[in-house]
Image (cartoon, rainbow over all chains, first blue to last red; front, side, top):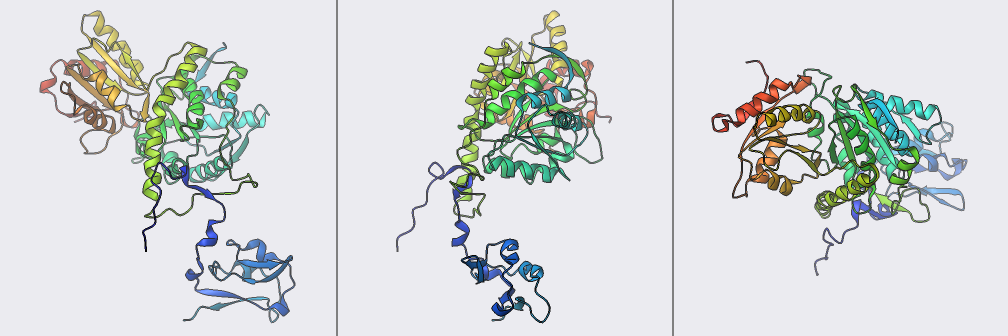
Length: 99
Length: 388
């Protein structure tokens, strides 16, 4: 294996300005102590979870919620807190991570 | 050119009005409050196009400035003392991200004990944060320096934040005659900020301020040091252009009767005005006294200062802040270090003075020049005017 050649200070882009979307390459899901679970049959597709997620970890397809990106979800629980579904018919619940 | 009677704070607020920044985020603090208070009135009166963000603290003010500047705006703020200290956490972020935020900073003592009057502790505490630091002797210089700071900071060869300082109350609240530029002249002089990239450009999305660990942080810090050093010729370039417009000449430092001086002092800010009176008195008596007035403390023009002082037999450096048992104040340690490699160099001593707004009188300056006439008998670091 050859060692990666890293740019020196003269070549490096100034001011820590990079291309966008670099967070995709950095998996932060390992920090999670509890995970959101999605129950599709209870989901009303309001997409509030998608709006409030600070890590863009609510996945969607064709404008519908499809689940969570567990590589990047840090388990903050904001989606669960804000989900408007009623007790007993919750679309999002939190479950402790267990090894 | 309009001539007006203005306090230092009014002069800076007027400069801000003429610069017409896109965003100002600020929080009031004595003695800098008026700068942003007067400017807020300009916003309310519709004299500027600025988005004024009132915030709950200076920490938030500087954070808002960082965000707005990253979005491509021309951004200004103003603060003092504890306010600047509350910004300390964000100041090096602004420079590392190469955001040319402009600040009017009114020098005031840091608590404690609590004190609202002038010294340079606040600004000197921020000297290693990658901000260009320009000191002013009076309201005229504060006005001129603030206009120039915009051009310096935003120059694509520099891209660093800059603070222009006045001395609390001594300049900030003292009314003087100043010569202003016409609004249209300032508009033409400062031009528009043209950042290479900005956060709101959705066609060219970028990441700013990503995590920067062992692999890259060091290189980015090295870049800031290089940019700071590289700003010195730009500062002079902007000063030349400003002199052509106004006739008022600025350098990195100013020499007052220094060329043939046998005893000289180094100072920054309002004290230099007081010193000039004493130097003139001494010159009238045939004593060859002179002064080096530092205008730009960051970047620090070490080599040029060393050259200017090398052949003078005795030099006193005045620090209006104390490093509390380092080898003298911050100005002294840097100048003494700059002189170390000179084959011929002055006998050099330090005076810590004026802390917490303690007046520096003509008699104090006279005593310094008197000490310099028997410099071999003096201590390295002296506390001028403190009661024993």
